[in-house]
Every structure is written in structure tokens, then in C-alpha cells.
Length: 230
Image (cartoon, rainbow, N blue to C red; front, side, top):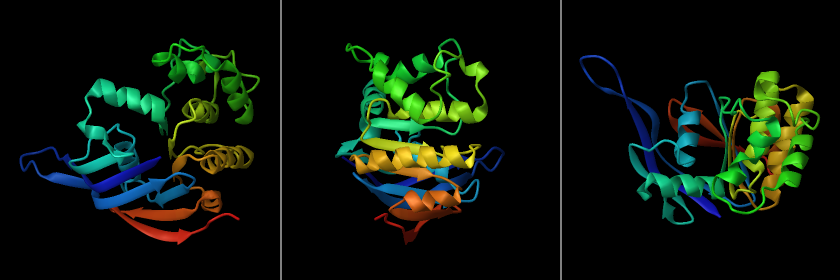
């Protein structure tokens, strides 16, 4: 599986009489390949999350295309795009998107229930929750979890369907060092199993798990270094 951005750019209109635009992401090309972890780092407000959301099919670019195995995401109607995201893209957003009425386990199983008629993969969901250190909290409600626990729940949910594309926006924010390593290891293992993984992170440890590191600065993306693991 391959995700390719071709000459994508994102402008946001400014408020006021002049009605000019703020360019959050300068025109760029970007490619994700199976088996690799790519990391993007940079200051807050540099455009990292905007780029990730465009790649995820969540934010339409002002210009350019995002292709998933040749399919133009933003040429699809909303229903088709939502289904494609569910089946092929795992997104770990910055914010918390848990449904408060569901248990932790039910929240993780949610992607498998939206479109599939098959039995939800409860065994895999339980294993993922155990892997992220939430094995004793499966029956808890989201409002009983800390911010770091909610983030780890989001990691498990994004990985449930074994998506070919994994996009993680600060997935280790607010976690202690043990859980940072645990989450980064899961993402690395997903890539080693054939997924394309994009990691937006400020963690210094993240580069150790990445094949390529990029820096976002004022909407511009540049390659920093390669840190391919042996």
C-alpha cells in the first residue's frame, strides 16, 4: 500500500476586511511506503497536524491530490471516503474522540462495527488494550481515564482493523517514558508487518523508531535524517 501527496497545499482564510489567506502547508510532495515509519517533527503551529489531516482524508487540500494506491481521496463522495478511511486508514488524533457512553473496550471495537457484518474482533481488541497497558480498564468508561490513558486507548482503536496506513498525531503526548516506548514499539511493529506509518512527535525517542525524519517549519517540509533500525 502507498499513500502519495502530489503538490498539496493548504490555505486558511483570515478574518477581517482584507480577506487574505494564511498558508498552513506550503506546496509539497510526500510519499509513504509500506514497511516504513516516517516521523515529522517541528514547532507547534508549523503545519504538522494540518498535513497529517490532509493525508488522512479529514481535511481537503486547497490544491493538489492525495492518492491511496492511485485513488484520489478527495475525488470520492463523503460516504465512500468515510468507508475507505475506516477500512484502510488508522488515525490517532491529537484530541480525545472517545464516546462517553461506551466502555473502553467498546470504543476500541467501534471501527469494526461501523461497516462490517462480521463478528467484532474482541480478542484482538483485548490484546491491543493489554499491549498499551489498559488491560485492567476495559470495562471502564472514558470519563474514568486520565488523558494519557485516553491517548493509549486511541492507539489501540486505530490499530484494531490492521490498517495499511497509520497516521499518529502526537500519540505519546503526556505519557511516561515506559508507555512512550510501548506505543512507539507498537507503531514500529505495525510498519514491520507491512503498514505505512506516519508519526508526528516531539519525543526525542521517536527518531530511534523511524526510518526517515522530516522537519516542518512555517509550512515547509524538509528531510532531516535517516535513522533506519537494524
